[in-house]
Amino acid sequence: MICIVLLKKSLASVTKKIKNCIYICFRTRRYKMDWILKEEEQRGKIAAVSNASRAGSQRGHGSKRGTSISSYNILPAKEPGSVEFTMEEIFRVTRNFSPSFKIGQGGFGAVYRAKLLDGTVVAVKRAKKSVYEKHLGVEFQSEIQTLSRVEHLNLVKFFGYLEQEDERIIVVEYVPNGTLREHLDCIHGSVLDLAARLDIAIDVSHAITYLHMYIDHPIIHRDIKSSNILLTENFRAKVADFGFARQAPDSDSGMTHVSTQVKGTAGYLDPEYLKTYQLTEKSDVYSFGVLLVELVTGRRPIEPKFELRERITARWAMKRFIEGDAISVLDPRLDQIAANTLALEKILELALQCLAPRRQSRPTMKRCAEILWSIRKDIREQLSASNFRSFSTSSQRSTSLKE
Ligand SMILES: Nc1ncnc2c1ncn2[C@@H]1O[C@H](COP(=O)(O)OP(=O)(O)O)[C@@H](O)[C@H]1O
Ligand SMILES: [Mg+2]
Image (cartoon, rainbow, N blue to C red; front, side, top):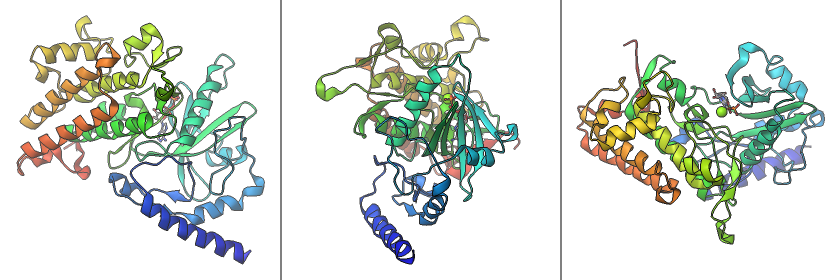
C-alpha cells in the first residue's frame, strides 16, 4: 500500500515536471482530476498544479462508483484521476436537486451548484425527463463527447457524467460570476465597462479558435451566445454548453461543409446555414458577430418590444454604423468618451465582417482574435494615464451602479 502511494507521488511529480515544460495555452488531452488549473493562472500564465490528493480521494470511493461508460468509444477510458459519480452521490451533493441549489435553466434542463465530498464546487447539469424531448439524448452525447476532448482556459472544464436509467447528468466546473447576458442586463448591480467587454470577446474568440483549429477533429460549437458565456470572478470568460456541438468538415478529405439540420438560437443563426443546411466553422463566426454587437449595444439580438427597424439588433446597428452614426448604438450605460467611441467603431467594423451574408467573406475565428487584440492595443495606446480607468484592470472591470 505504502509502495503504491509512493509510486503515485513520484509519478505525479514527474508528470508535473513534464507538464510544466510542455504546457502551452491550450492542450488537447483528456481531463484528469489531478490537474486543476488555478483561477489566477487563467490570465495567461503557463502553469498547472497537481492535485494528487483530490485524485486520491476519488480513488478512495472507487468500489462504490459505477459510472456508465457508454458505447461512445471516444469517451475517456477509466483512467486514474477521471471522476466517476454515482446517482447516490449526485443526490447527496445537490440535496436531492434542491431548488435552493439551482443556478440556471436551459433547453437541456436545470443546472445546480454542488460541493463534492472533497470540497470541489461544481455545476451539475441534469437533463429534463420529458418523453417529448428525445433530442436531449443527442445533446447529452454531443456535450460529453465534446467536453471529454477539449481543454482550454476559456472553456468550462469537464469533471464527469452519469447516465443511469432515465437520468442524464453532466458535471463541470462551477463558474461563479453568472452569464455574460446577466451582466449586460446589470442584474448583478454593476455595469461591465467596455474594456472588460473587449477582453471577454477576446477570451471567447480564443476558445472558438481552439475548437476550430487546435484539436484533432475540429468542432463547431453552434450555440455561441451570451447566456452560454460564463464569467469568473475576474471577468474572464468561459464558453459553456456543447449540446449542439458538431464535428467540423474534414478539410483533408476535401469536405467544405457538413449537411445537417439547423440547430442554434434565433437571432444568432447564420442565414446561409439556415438556407442551405450547410454547416461550417463560419457559422460560429456569424454568431460571434452577433455577440460583438450585443457586447457594445447591451441589447439582445432580437428585441421584440422595440420598433420594427430596431428589432433585429445586428441589422439596426450595422445600418447605423454604415451611415457613420455608430455612437448612437453604444450601450447607454457606457460613457461616450473617446476611447469607448474608438473601440465601438473598431468592434462594429469587425462585426460587419463576421455578419457577411456569404461565409467566404467572413474572417476565420483566428483572424477575429488577432483583430480584437490589435483593437485592444490601439485603445490602450490612445489612452493617457489619467483616463486609463475606463480600460482598467480586472479588479475594476465593472462599475457599481450604486456608486
Ligand atoms: N458551469 C457553470 N457554472 C455556473 N453556472 C452555470 C454553469 N453551467 C451552466 N450554468 C447556468 O445554467 C444555464 C444553463 O446552462 P447551459 O449549459 O447553457 O444549459 P442548456 O444546454 O440547457 O442551455 C446557464 O445559462 C448558466 O446560467
Ligand atoms: Mg445554454
